[in-house]
Image 1 (cartoon, rainbow, N blue to C red):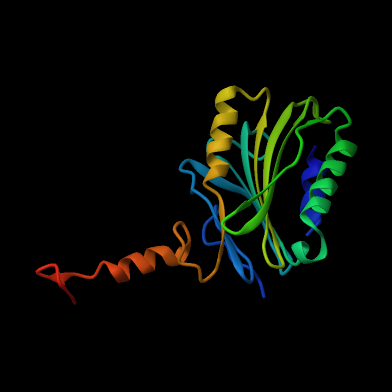
Image 2 (cartoon, helix red, strand yellow; image 1 turned 135 degrees about the horizontal axis):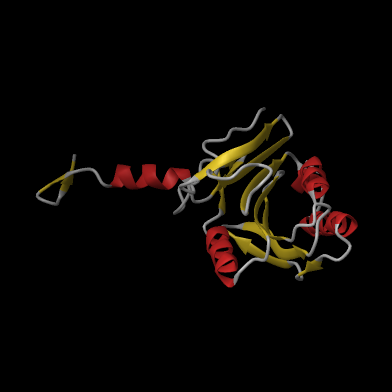
Length: 203
């Protein structure tokens, strides 16, 4: 299964990581809730890709029960349709875990961007572990952004609910967007919340 994560990352100006939950490309930024009690276990940043892995801070890269992975791939959305990318990931997973169980790919749209989501279970990796993961991908104008939630061992209904709720907080924004949940929204609110005199004149 380790090979799967490496191959998935290999499918992908220097982008930036505001904090582990946010990844900014050339035109868009992937926003999600910052998780208290999590630490960055792995971080790869280059001119063409980002791969950031977070795990609970009481765990280690070799022993973890829950993992959050954030990825950015430069121009992947321009080079490959999201259906092709989803098929590529599923093909890699099938090769590395022939007994993998995968849900159908669910295509959608969020915040004006095309998305796809699917869930997969590998009953036994090379190390003998059961891995379940949930993957949400956004196609930007040129770049692809991915957020994955993974569980080692048998995932419970509470795990799936937590993962679903967490992925629901993830959104892709244009860098200069002032839509709710995007970086410019707070600045817009602060600008509009200037003090008033007798509730009439803004100062």
